[in-house]
Image 1 (tube, rainbow, N blue to C red):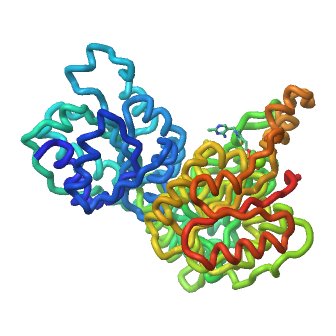
Image 2: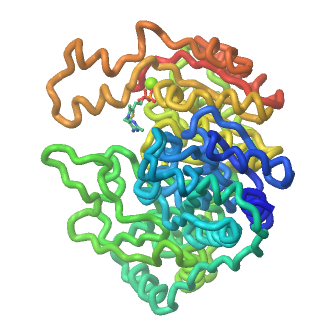
Image 3: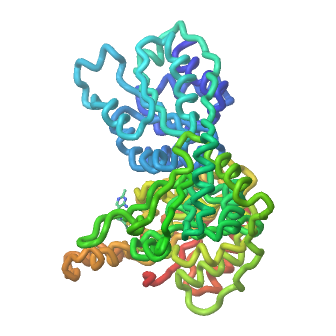
Length: 517
Ligand SMILES: Cc1ncc(C[n+]2csc(CCOP(=O)(O)OP(=O)(O)O)c2C)c(N)n1
Ligand SMILES: [Mg+2]
């Protein structure tokens, strides 16, 4: 057995059954070995950022890692932005980066580069086996490292000669470290704060944004009269009818400050201390109100949902969570805007849908319009690096066959990783993509004023508008095998969306909307 075969068998035995791949010559033995191990599904992605974003989407939904196969330093570099988002999401993910044969490196062939440095910028664990006999054990270690709470990126750098060399054996899966329990006295201290009668905000995130965490949080806030909020960009938020509703902390610092205004205690359960996304001249970076004390219920890697449940049992033993009532907006008519599009999405969102939200400024109305829709998952742009949404949808659809995936995409962001559409078609994935075609980097138009830059002239405008030529997303989608339609009115949009959701397989709807705000 060669190293590649032992590696892939070990990945399969450890529960890694998908490999989102963009291979090159140094990965050819890995590619060949996929035919020996049918338990691992190879999914071709036409750009590495699609492979890494798909692995992120898979990991968020499956709770176990996918692998991403990348070609040396340049392939890894192309995948870095979505690995950055995955790192912020604490997604379990195994990156396999092929490298030159060990004896070839000193010749400094054109693709030679510092893979270790690139991998180090996003990985919590990385290793470079030097013998074929070691690679399977390293792969088993990689999976365990990726899975250890709270989840992260493990990178295996795979020299070509380690891959093709014989004498390898599969390794047994490793035990995965469990989340640590939060000490009882910490939970008691937070309970005392909540009982103190001063204004409290409970800010949830990470696994506390899933149903059990939200139910515990809702009980706590009802009993203590505290405000409940969720981090701005949760990796996976469970929401909809029957689940306690939670507002996310706003992206714009001034709105976030209004949400936190008056709090004397900020209790963090899976969320980090809130900070402004960017610095603005004369504005604070920290969003913690003056005179507000911050309390950590636990740290990443702790059993935070367990701690939140224990907290609820102390401060709210007889209190039930407040479920969101089922309520949907009516189907819109008239002009198509980001707002009426959100209404249609709220009216039609199917039960169990997975929403990959990269709608950016066009997404402003989505949370309210979909709050009372049937239960669904909402995946957000955890690291702020755009180009995530279409790949994330790819991975979510591979992880959850039988569930509808809705990719809500801003036009500018869609273009970064537009080739994901081809993988949607190739794999027959049940993904409906909505492109909010506002023909601009609308948010940058807004930020130009917010950072206090001089009002944009013609040269600035040319860096913010996506017109001349207009992007034709229906033609782009058709060229990659995804059936597409364009909507210019609210009724057209609702009609296209209803049809797309009723029919299995990928669809794209280009929604012509004016820039919001
Ligand atoms: C990888 C990466 N490159 C660049 C940016 C800077 N950036 C933030 S938003 C944006 C444009 C967003 O335009 P679009 O996706 O169309 O959304 P809209 O603002 O129009 O709603 C850019 C270029 C970023 N966040 N991430
Ligand atoms: Mg746009």
